[in-house]
Length: 303
Image (cartoon, rainbow, N blue to C red; front, side):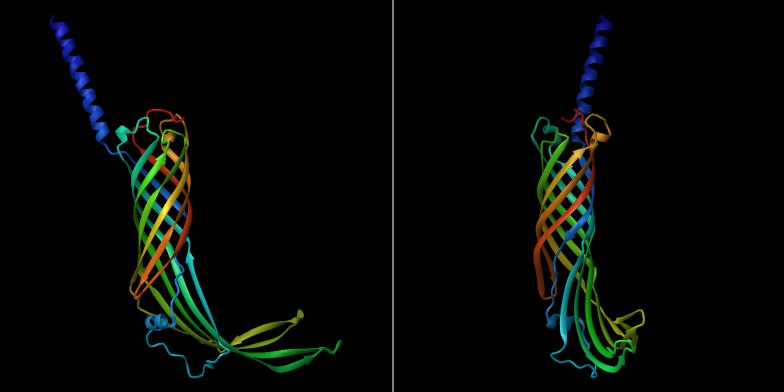
C-alpha cells in the first residue's frame, strides 16, 4: 500500500513539475537577432544661397576674382548609401502561435549610416593663346594656351546614426521560406556637421604633348587654395518605411541551422532631414541582405 502511495505521489509531483517547466518556458520571451547590410537612397539635400551664406559666416570672394555672367554655378547632392543595422525582434504571443498562419514581432533597430554630402561649386576661366607653334612637316599651327581659372567651393557633410522601432508581420512562420512586411520608423541622429569653403586661383600653361601633337599638356602653377572650416550643429532626420523581406531557413530539421535564416529585403518610404529653418524630404528606397537567429523553442521541422 505504501509503495502505491509513494508512486502516486511521485507521479503527481512529476506532472506538476512538468507543468511548471512548460509555464516557465512560455514566460521566457522569444526573440530574433538580425544583422543587415545594404544600400539606401536617402534625402537629396539642397541649400539656397541664403542658407549657404548663413552656414559660412565671414566668407568673402577675393577682389581679384572676376565674378560675372561667365561664371558657372554647379550644385551637387549625394549620399554614401552604405548602412549596417542590428535588429532585435520580440515575438508576440509565441505560446499561441502554434498552427497560426502568421506571426507578429515588435522590433528595435540600431545602426550606422548613411552619409549625406552637399556642395556648391562656381568657377571662371579665361583661356587665351600665348604662343603658336608650326609643324615643319605639315605647316599646321599648334597653340599654347594660358588658362587662368578661379574656383569657389562650399561643402557640407554629415554622418548619421539610426535608432528605429517597428512592427513586423510574418506569413506562414512554419515554412522554410517566409515573407515579412510591416512598418518601421527610424530616427536619424547626425554628428556635428562638417562645413568647409575653398577658394582656389590657378594659372595653367596648356602646351603640346611630344607623344601626341594634338593633345595639350597641363603644367599647373600658382595654386594656393584657401580653405576655411565652420562650426555646425547636430542634424536630425526621420525615415518612415515599409519593409519587404524574403528569407529562408538553413535547414528543415537540424536543431541549430533551422533557427538561422538568410534574407533579402527592400524598403520603401519617405526620408526627412531637419536643418535650421529647413526640412528636406523625398522618396527613400533601400535594399539589403540579412542574417538572423531565432531564440525560441522550435520543435517541429519546417515544411
